[in-house]
Image 1 (cartoon, rainbow, N blue to C red):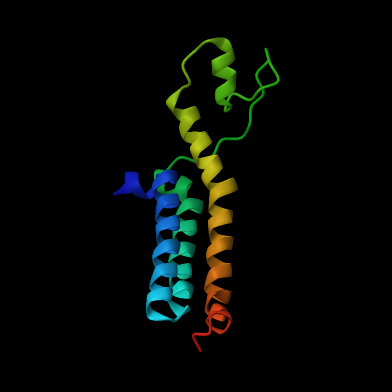
Image 2: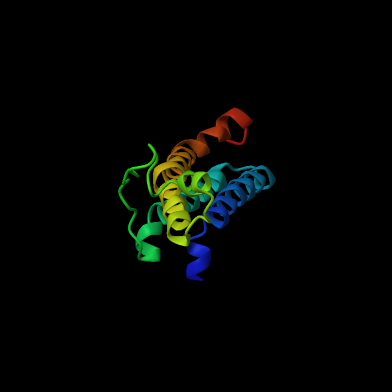
Length: 128
């Protein structure tokens, strides 16, 4: 279960699925309040993305510059340039950095927007 809750791909799939189901239910039931409700679920998925470092128990490391290049030791490209395999801790750090810095904020913003304004589509669609 922990592996699923810390998977960026799984949580992003849940986000898209929640939005799709909310939209389809809204059309079938002729009430966009359902899209708004599913927007609240999307916020939950965003919070889980933001909480990835806490759930894995591994903090995001600060960038440490390598003396032989301008790249950070936390950058997978550094190891690729050296011809070495990317260490697991670097890959995990990169996944957490993407979850906290990119995916989580976008998903939370999207969910908040849909939760707050999704029901306004009732008037536009003539479902009032």
